[in-house]
Length: 321
Image (cartoon, rainbow, N blue to C red):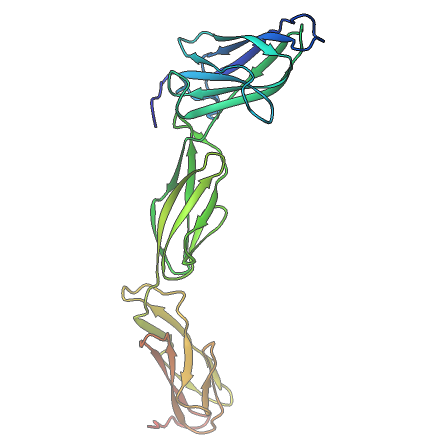
């Protein structure tokens, strides 16, 4: 991350603009002088992390044309020395609007990565004193997505977290956007990922202002059904009082874990006398003893069954083979 100075301070930028008119405020080509004071007070206890990082070792002060952002006068670089005020003096500043900007760096010479900044729009009027104060906010210099890798079951969801940091490793509250490289994984605006199909994807979080990003490699697996259990495994229907019964089927993988997304289809070898719908409801129209096997299939060659016998009221159960 670069060099960091571990000193508990909050950097406040106080800009005092002193103007001296040249030949009167209404004359063409009038100018003034500008004195920029940069103050490094002690960081108060409990100050929010978004304040200027203590890693600051230099500040570049700029006076720019608003909108165009071209320099009106050459930049001044203030290398930090101690905790007292640092001063940059601009001898000649033309009258008119200007944008005063301060860029903070970890380096001592005003180069490299900008870790905080502030700016304010002001106007220079000949013969008048303009005072400007700047309080910079820390910039995002690092973004980290956790976890870095993730395994998801098909249709399962999990939360990814994107954390932004400033140059002091303080957390900066910032908005990120999410995207996925594959339709196998969907990602919501809050970083929740869902396994849409078997496969893999790179899920990325991006902080737009800094263009920083980080990723998580997500792999989606779909567990196979090793066993289907039908409950009950056998039953007796006694029409006309009881001509229906409800069956349930649960699919398990090889480890004995329920496969919640398994699609169960039902069938009966006793059609049309003994039927079953796709919710597992068994019905009979028989007035005589009969027998049927109800099958619940997950489509992977591992079926579960229920042995259904029909014995109308007043009749004995006869084993029909």
